[in-house]
Every structure is written in structure tokens, then in C-alpha cells.
Image (tube, rainbow, N blue to C red; front, side, top):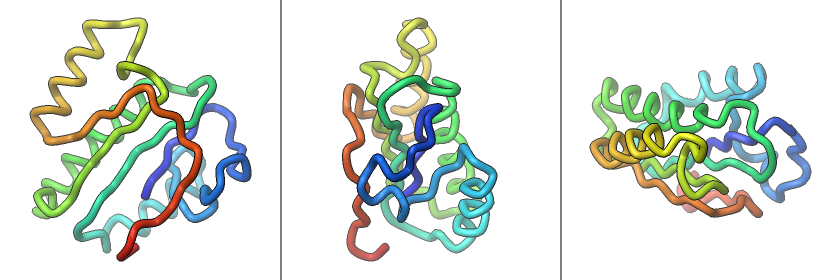
Length: 127
């Protein structure tokens, strides 16, 4: 599981966060780079915590990049990508951009779940 927090990196504030992998710090991105080559199937979620975001479009971009990465490796069909945000749409100030992102997610079988807050990080069976 990869979790993209907002601008405040208080990993202790969310139970289970220490077991997740984020990509907004150098250490987190380095760890993710080590993990991804061995990843072959299963669910993958990008989830944003509450509060201000360092880069609101970053998680949407990461989900699309993950789709491309998994497709290039030939394992996309064995993987689920879900983007969960505390916002109702990916980019609230830009309805047109949000519509384009939601269409891109739909084309790539990326599930978008809006208006949800991260309260707990728990690994599923097999992780």
C-alpha cells in the first residue's frame, strides 16, 4: 500500500502509517523504488490524509503513472488501483481538469473514491 499524505508529514497521527509506503519524502520514494519491481499483483491504493496538500494533483498523477508502470510490466490486469481523497473531485478549483482526470481514471480502470478521510492504514491478507 502506498499512501500520499498532504503537506504535514505526521506519520504517527494515523494508526498503521508506519507500515505504509509514501512517496513525498526521499526515504519514502527510495523505498517505493525498491518495492515496485517485485510487486506483481494485488490492490494498490493512493490515499490522502486531511489538511492542506503540497500538490493537489500529485496523487492523481501518481495513480496514472502507476497504471502506465504496471501496464509496461504486463501486470496491470492483475492489479487494482484505487485513488481515495478527502475531496469530492480530484482538483476542486478546476471542474474541467477534474472531469478530464475522472475520464482518464475510467479509461484505465482506476477507481476514484472522493470525500473520504484516511483514519487507519491496515494491510490486507497477502501483504
